[in-house]
Image 1 (cartoon, one colour):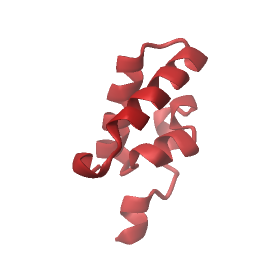
Image 2 (image 1 turned 180 degrees about the vertical axis):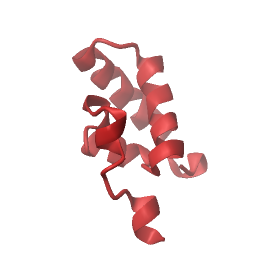
Image 3 (image 1 turned 60 degrees about the horizontal axis):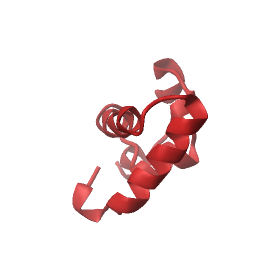
Image 4 (image 1 turned 30 degrees about the horizontal axis):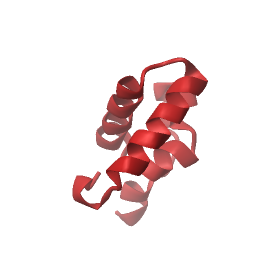
Length: 71
C-alpha cells in the first residue's frame, strides 16, 4: 500500500463506519487494512469494496488484488 497516495480522512471515516458494522474499533479495522495490504496486496479501497472485513484469511487469499494483477 502506498501510504502517500491514500486519503487518510477517507480511510479513517470508512474504518469507523465498518467498525460499527462489525462491532470492532476503528483502530482495529485500520490495522486490518494495513495487514491485508501486506499479506494480500490489497489497497485500502479494495479492502472496503471487496468487504475483506467480512472474510477469513483463507477466503482473502483467493482474491486477485491490484498488486498481484499488475504483476
